[in-house]
Image (cartoon, rainbow over all chains, first blue to last red; front, side):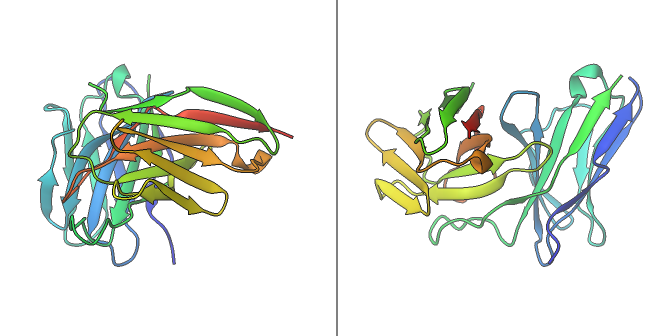
Length: 119
Length: 112
């Protein structure tokens, strides 16, 4: 049973280029979360998606960043016109369902991350 | 604003020691507190989690202590081993959560 898969594992872009990060959730999982981790820091929530819907994008920068989770295929985090400050590790997590607030939480399983370096 | 504050930033213990990592929070709406373990080049993996209606939870060598009145919780690793060397993150979430708020991480080094 494959875990959460992310590709590429490493991505190098020059300033102004576009970065596309892909995430395939665990089999059967329909909830996807993206987090960003700056060096020596914790993970910061970016966006939560279900199939074809963005549920919570409160952590996403207002410009240049977008995310999607189509009916078929992986979730995509897209960064347009990258800048040096975008250099970070981007982690995707998936869960079987969201938390109910009553029966406990659905574990979020994390992928290995994509390390983006902007030159 | 850091929702969850974690300390220390790094920790070195000898094999067999009991490293303790502490976290504090302000938002009383948080009601789920997981700990994640991350090895270099890997994604975080859930280690253990607690809800505020209990003061302690043990799973193997890992124990969470929770102090609701102080809004603090901590991770204890009993009989630590070199293989426990990793970065540990505490986190918190609210009811009907859709995201975790992570601490800044503690880099643990267990010396043989």
